[in-house]
Length: 461
Image 1 (cartoon, rainbow, N blue to C red):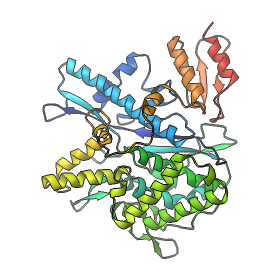
Image 2 (image 1 turned 90 degrees about the vertical axis):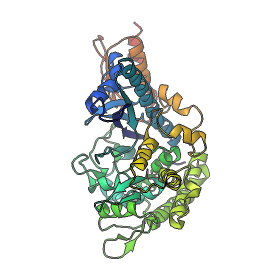
Image 3 (image 1 turned 180 degrees about the horizontal axis):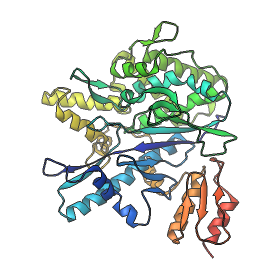
Image 4 (image 1 turned 90 degrees about the horizontal axis):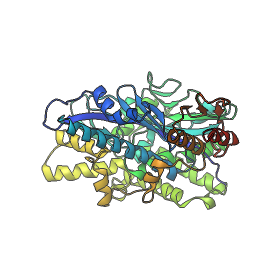
């Protein structure tokens, strides 16, 4: 049986209030964030709140709304809960825009699921994977670093990048230029690809949390799913398998070089001499996964969704290597965006540096009703990974096979019955209720707990 894992995604969103009359935005970022969260605050929640579906809603530094999904065991659940965050923010923006219109404010709020604003400021999309605690943790995750450096060629969001020479080029990744370290315990200061700060949000004797901050925010559901299919490599690492022995001389230099070469053949220097390429790294990693899954008997138990993702991984590598991207242009963000950009350029005669293309890029990531995603999915230009209504269900219901079920149901009942409470990823507590103690949920896999049942019963008395 394939080992089980708990996963989650934290996504920071870009936010702006654009003038409907042209010119200066009528609200600055802080005012825009305040308007966006107005209804949340009026409902009794704060700008840092856990929701009834197990997720966390948060206003991060720099007026960036953030949504952290509930703990999920499957890629399908994770993609649905990630998209539930988009639906939440789209709804909040729609309500805020109605309030602005009622007050006669000539502005419209937009939320962008991207990683760069117009000024070049970066905000992240962080992946979290529960791993077993072991003394050689750092050495083991180091073997995955070449994969994360080059994963952008199969799961990047695409970027119109203006270079220091003033020339705009299309790149695989929005995050590549924002990485300044490979592996570190810092996040904002050095912005590493893998963060090693030890915050397991679970039993510290058993678990660690691998915190990956190198990835782009994806719009296409298959791209999000493929991004977190990295969990397959973790299976190899935890099973004691040896990943391909690729040691990059300078991962930071390599990730930048890989982003700018759409052929996937950028030469990446290796420790001790020699070079490899992004296509070669990804192909060797995929081959290692397939061989290990076959040897361990995991392949026979693969869910259909995982089979599709392994196939997509291979097709994406082949598409980059061949230069023929048509076969993945409805599944992988950078390919979908590049096709969109090239169609516009053919029709309009615009060049990559044209401001109209920058606006098109933003519209691709806009999760409000002004964005392109819904129309592209309806037209068959973007494929989905989850089934109909999955994101809507995830908006209201936590995953039923993780700790999030306990948290979500506790929050829902406390809010319905108007009890004051305090929660975080591991703790549940009723405030000002005699005879109650904080319940600590150390096991992220557990969706049943008698202590939580007793806490819920207290609300009925």
